[in-house]
Image 1 (tube, rainbow, N blue to C red):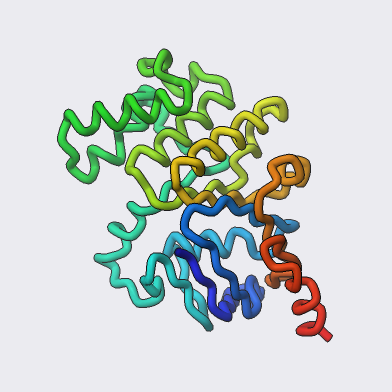
Image 2: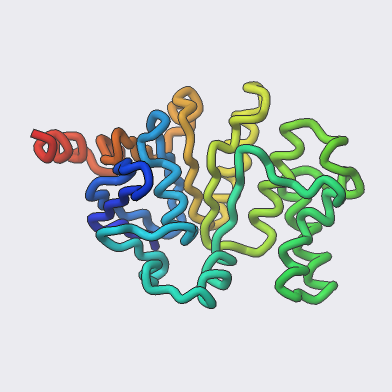
Length: 234
């Protein structure tokens, strides 16, 4: 489903090299953690997957499409395949839980009956049906993140990208958010979680790709990855 083929990315203004010859493959329906310290290249990988940026070298292939070759008109349609969960929730404060989740469906012109069906199902999946008429400032941080998860899945995406999804919730709720993402993955949706919270990664027992200075230094799906990186740097 997703391939990075010798992908390198340098930011011209700062001269920072964010990714260095990164190659990986994520299969349809996988659950993958991408970890690493600040500046390791995690956010750059997300930006390349969402077409907010393009690689200088190499290719990013998603569902057989080379993201570098998508036109501006094609990018919005491409992005509808992806659900994104942000660290800071990004809910619209003057909309209810229901309307926050329904917002993207209305933007693309879905019919009212379909919107109702999809939103109700999404709220049920994250356990927020009873909070439909409440506003973001009436919710806890964990509840706001659950709204963000429901918004991410309401368009029936093939892939969810969760960028530090537990960064603004209480530690006691972090496992709950991760288990929710695992349940979504079990529905057949590819889930990519970007995080630096190693304790969560350790207890989830899923594939882990670790970045350092723009390189993949380990990949639990590839026991040879650390050896390969070591030889590349020598």
